[in-house]
Length: 136
Image (tube, rainbow, N blue to C red; front, top):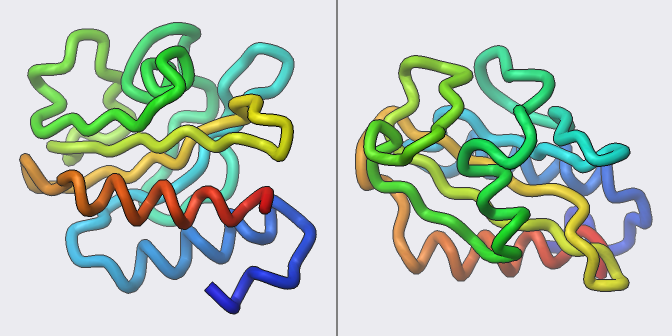
């Protein structure tokens, strides 16, 4: 991604990644980052409908990705216990942890779709590669 390779600002990279994914990927209804700040998970740069500003600790898909330190694919959010519904239109979701240069989780990329079963292992692979570019 030549768009961000020479930029040394993580927030600028996140904003650009959001815009690119949101407008180029079919089925990406909400695309954004949630960032850890003093133990809280707060909304960061995003594209889409209004977001939840603060996500309740250790609840929902985003916190699951942080706590497990791995990507979480949810084919049907109705089947995910503790799902946080910022939009009633969301049907499936993928969350990719963001690691800084020291290997610490600093947030997640969260992508929602209006369709169930919209995300797969291919999405996981490429989104992880894209997110890796933020701090490297």
